[in-house]
Amino acid sequence: MLGILLAVIAAAALIAILMSISGGKKKKGGMQTKGGKRSKSNALVIKECTKKLLKDPHNVEALTNLSDIYYSEGNYEKAFPPYSELFRIMGLHNDVNQQLVAVRYGICAYKLGKQNDAMTAFSKAMKLNNRDFHTNLYVGKIMYDRKEFDKAIAYLKRAMTISPESSEIAQPLGYALFEAKKYRESLNYLKKVLDETPDNKEALFYFAIAMKESSMAEKSLKYFMHLRTDPKFGAQACIEAGILHERQGAYDKAIQDYEIALKLETITQETKINVYYKLAQALIFQKDISNALNYLKQINIINPNYKDVSSLIARYQELNQNSNLQAYLMCGTSDFVVLCKKFVMAYYKAASVKIEDVTVSPDNVEITCSVESSKWTDLELFRFYRSTGAIGELYIRDCHSKMRDIRCDRGFCITPGTFSDEARKYVDGRPIDLIEKSRLVQVLKRINMSN
Image 1 (cartoon, helix red, strand yellow):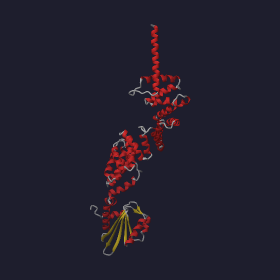
Image 2 (tube, one colour):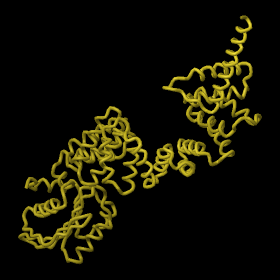
Image 3 (cartoon, rainbow, N blue to C red):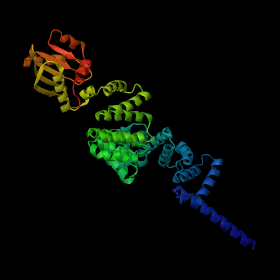
Image 4 (cartoon, helix red, strand yellow):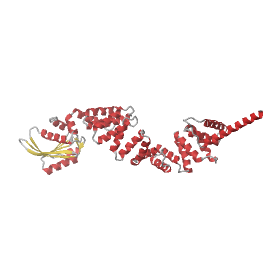
């Protein structure tokens, strides 16, 4: 009986050893886990490998089995140390797959944010085989992270030639092309990303921007509007939608875009200031000066030096208090011509004025008129500017030349701004009057602006 019992024990021990070896060999080729749980055989291998490494930290078989198990589980943090050691000693051991170790060590390092270690590993892998898919893929990703977009594109395109059907290429290559401002080329890859992951808001935002920059602004507008409420990209999408609506002349829709942006809890202070500024500009186009001033003043509280906010506040605060001047500066072209005619008729209190000709050009409106009083009769030229800056000498010379051509007796140059010193000197001794804002406002007050 004793002999039979010993034989049974020996047989059981032999079976256990064989099962252990078999399990180790399977893991070396890459074992899978079921349902995210580690298999019993993997747990046993890890336990045995740990024991071996306590005795011999350079045990190649234990390092290989341990790193392979953790890597197959996606546990890059635990896979990194054994791969790091294998990478360090692999030149001394012919049985180590140097290419595999270098690539996997690099991937683990990249996943853990250790880009210098990753580049060291991938540089070695590239020397061993520069046509390895994962090596080119991850070097491309690292170049992208370093904002070396042209280099990223080169590596990622090489990876694509190695494995054209890979689903890992579209996003990094599309993003790299986008950042390199190769917008039209990026569209195809960004579209693939959206086909695979329709809820990818980042890819959708890049896709919309790329469309806009590729002369497909109208098509991009619907994507920006779709993204307006997104916590991350919503504010910028609102700005882009607002800009496109402004280009269409739809300022009411642009205002709505900007107002949606301001309701987002995730909007940054910097973006909020930008939205305030754009909203103020859109309101000014809508002639809503009062509300535009409110936004400009909010900017001024946060950042008094932002763009030209201080000068805009000064300008539009005055306009808000002076409806006549506001009309002069902001009414449409046809209304402005009517207003200029009224100015000419109101300029002389005791004279008869007959308008002979009206000429509209991009920078001014000219009115030629005959003026008759009880003592004199003149042919006069009124030239109206709407610029609030300084009118220079060349403009006055041009007006004087026109007066000579049509044989005018007198000329008037009117501006809501000022005239330069050179312009003032030029009119000395010449029959030209320069009318600046204060005098302009006085005459405007005599005009019935409601009609």
